[in-house]
Amino acid sequence: MLLFLLINILLYSQELVEEAIITDIKGVVEVLRVNTTYWQRIEKDDFLYIGDIVRTGKDGSAEIVFSDGNIVELTPFSKLKIEKIDVEKGEKLELEIGGVLIKVEKGKGFEIKTRHAVCAVRGTEFAVSVSKENTHVGVFSGKILLRHYDAKGRLAKRALVLRKNYETLVRMYLPPSRPKRLGRRMRFLKERMKRLRKRAKILRERMKRRFKERVKLKRKRAIKRQKIKRKRVKEYMRKRRRR
Image (tube, rainbow, N blue to C red; front, top):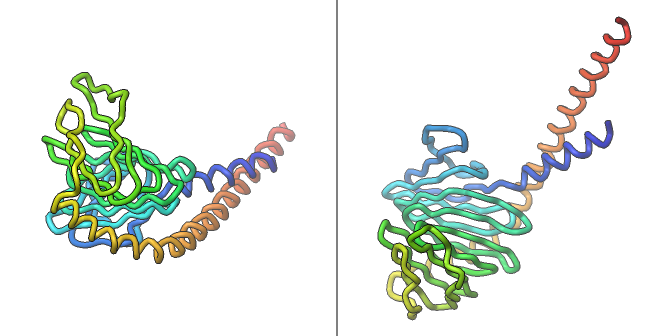
């Protein structure tokens, strides 16, 4: 019985870290929770989970911090799905439309896909914007590996290495364009990244405390549930002996 208790506590703790938190919000931001069919307003300090989809309105933006310290800023008119959260291997996101600024912690992995391509990174600062026609990617520090989808929906075997201060454009079913120096739009986003970088230092410690509190709370709930289960099993066994 003790073994089952420990396993349950471990599982609940692992489930807990598969979360993200909204740390800043402006305008209208909504979430479609996994296994639901309706959109609801989301507020600062709300948690996000695997399978959730976040969208921003005309003047909406949202800052999302994952439990491993990676940060995503969602720009207006954007829709982002959280496909995977893994403290060891990093996050996997899908950007359907709109734009994101992303700061990935050193040593941490991260992957974001669009209808045109997949970007895989580690310890990088970059931006991605998506329209129906193309995906625009710019790197502000580090580098990313970018692979496009072909007409059969397969990812290219060879990846483009996009380095610091360069950008590229990926059109439907076509390889990325030749990398060029950051243009006006990406230079503007690079300036915004400075703000995100400063906030990262503040958010890192704050989020550690928040997630630790959540771990403790969930552990207590897991222990309580396990005690109730043990009690029910004992009652059931007593009734069987009386028969």
